[in-house]
Image (cartoon, rainbow over all chains, first blue to last red; front, top):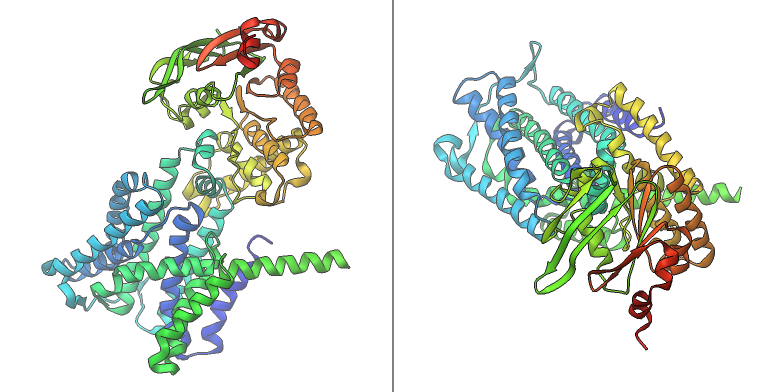
Length: 317
Length: 252
């Protein structure tokens, strides 16, 4: 299967890492954050990269999933899986209701509206302290278990998050290359032409908004259980911006672009720690240099160059 | 029953009457051309027909169904397609994918089925690819199938819009200035293409400035001037009509 060769290679790499480097801090600890960020970036790319609809509020759905799991399991004693499901259902309903009015907006106005959504949800996490624990958050979630096997160690979390991440990447690749994905790209390319080809653009945008929010919500639930703690700062406006940066950095509209973008943005701060006080400065400089020289995104630019190079060497032979 | 029936359409932009009290019918299996000086309201008429602009008053019927207030995608579902004067090609896709979008109405996989890549999706994908290739071949674009649309020259992009519309298998195709910006060879090719489209059973409504093209391929010509119907009839009659000559060349 040529179509999925990149995916299989990536899956093999992810599976090999903890076997080659067991108990490595970067693999089993940082790796978990990387996986969560990849899931979020890939799901945001469905909306932003494919359909061309910016969202500065993606962290809100991530947070709603996380808080749903924390509140429903701790305060109401619900089974973790049921809590995750209930959170996902609530996020789907909310995102569906919001999608129609919000996605009528375009460009800067859509950015503003989704920004507002993110901020409102964040304020809710901070202010509704009887429910959410306020700025202190909630800790002590029950252990998630799969068929009796408790997910209680870093390495087990690695496999769980890795599986869900790979599933998200696979969904995204499948969509790219399908009727639904082409409808999204058509909306991105020209909404008028998409309509004239019979595409109900409002429905298409709304569906991908809900789908991407749903993935973020499940990721949020997993994150809450893995961290064993939720607090508002994990779901702030700044995190939404970081997710947008991941997608743009890797290359808008490319699934593996989002993967690479999420990987770099998650790993870079860890690596740059050696520079101590200059960490943030160097981090910013790297982002600027990449965007100035490779504006189409790191992954997309490199891919295009490789394809170009291979065509040229084939032509010369 | 006529294929398209326009009754007393009026379109105002504030105080400006772009189209006033316009009525006409288009019969099946013809090339019906709409001509007129710049600013006569031709593209506005297309935008009203596809409800990109809402008409101020009047009504439009397609095969007996009123489409006046339907959103564009519903009008498309009934069998109307169009090309655009200012190109609306999906530049973020390659040529084949553009035309595959044209097959949207002839396929049905949804988002979830696509994400899971169910067997039905794989089957449909093959069919859609074949349909799109057929439309590309019909327009003589098969050699460009895998080229990114953004890398294609203007003349090819114009044909690509036609191929994309044909992939939807419409009953009525509205073409907005397909010959604008084309050289003589390309225009001659376009002329043949439009004839083949009509022969395949698709009615063509054409907005065009190239008079020799219009006169060669049309069965019926409608002349608009200042948003009003100036004349309507077969090309031979229109060419001799003194009012039409005056509108184009000025009066003596």
